[in-house]
Image (cartoon, rainbow, N blue to C red; front, side):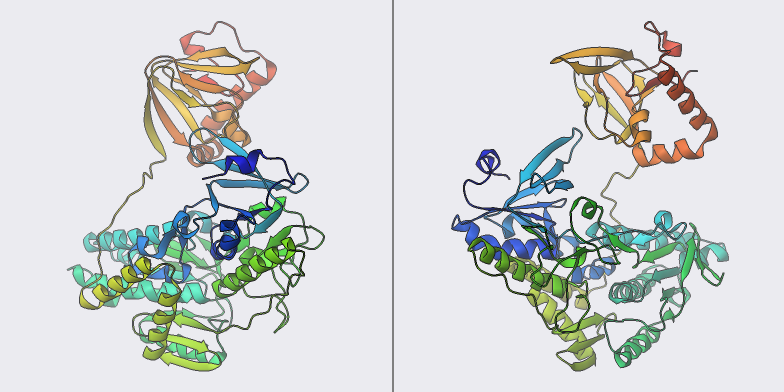
Length: 566
């Protein structure tokens, strides 16, 4: 939802406009802190996120083991923020000079919009970058989103199904070895949940011995869990090892293949499951936001959470380097801190609008919980060191109390109760279309893509005719008609650009569609296919396109349209 009047009215008129980027802890709780002022009409609040839900991150690992159903730890943003204009869109960039945010709405046809702001809150979190370790991007499971957790769970069940019928010992070893990289909070929790789930699930497979399951946790430092003191970290490690998890300290991963994790010392671990709880990197959006950066690439803010020398720009959460006024340095990138920063920045924005001085952010952590699998956890609560079952009970009680909305709390309690009474589910649900190559059918006059839209696919005409056209002086100027065997769209993909022309069905059309990632991989790895594309590019560059092209030697416009019958 967006407010047409808010977008159309001239700047400087009406209540101040606050735009929040990101739907995580920082963004959601900033908006919640501004809701009352928005309800009274004192400000206009807008929030932009690529998801229409708020994910409760502390319970994400329990989705992997099936302790919690995925929908029960997400909340619809529109129901949480009833007085905030919500934009389900990709954030393309920030134009600080014009004080506008550029967003792109999802869908086949690109639709861009500029959202003006008086105050901008950057709360986009961090990204995952595994590119520095060869093979990790292709073969490791990241663990940041609900989709990551759901994909990992489905993969674990697939592995167990495959292990049930595998007769080759070496293959069985690979299938039943699970490697988690990163011994911080996320890595430990994920390793514990994988271990509990796989060992329990193995009892439902007649030919899989739970004793053959190996879960390995790799940590590059000399201890796990830097969030805890050394005694608690040592306790946590003993708990993990007591549950059958191998903990390898001072161990770095160097490379990954589809079947192997290769360590820094050259040791190879055969595995089909590699989970990466490392690789945090700055969000690409920060490249468009003015301001200084800390050594980790985060946006530097002062003690009031404002970006220095950039009036009206604030930042909170993982993307911000927030000074820690109590301990020195910067605040840790945890949900607990992001939530409190969000509440403080909301107060500071209201104060600034009222011509009052903003107050510095200062927060003393209440403690930290680290779940170690069923009925065990370690915790530091206000200086009190707790471990074992009581810590596990406190962990669940605290995070349940923090979960937004009563409805979701009740659903999670029901999930936990069922977990105590019954075995966890081992049903594999593939709900997405994961094929890199698909087919599509179009009726006459239906648009396949529009000029100016971001290139995302490569197209081959199987049957029918496709028109390639451009807008000229408000009219459609046809440039080519393509038939069976022709392909188009490759030039924009290879250049990473927007479509320079539009495509629509002239007759009923059947297309073969390859997604951009698979096309790029094919174009860069296949010598013959790459040579064909180079030949096409050279012909276009030299302007050798004929005006009357036969079906067997047809070549398209600058957008890309060429026959594969060459």
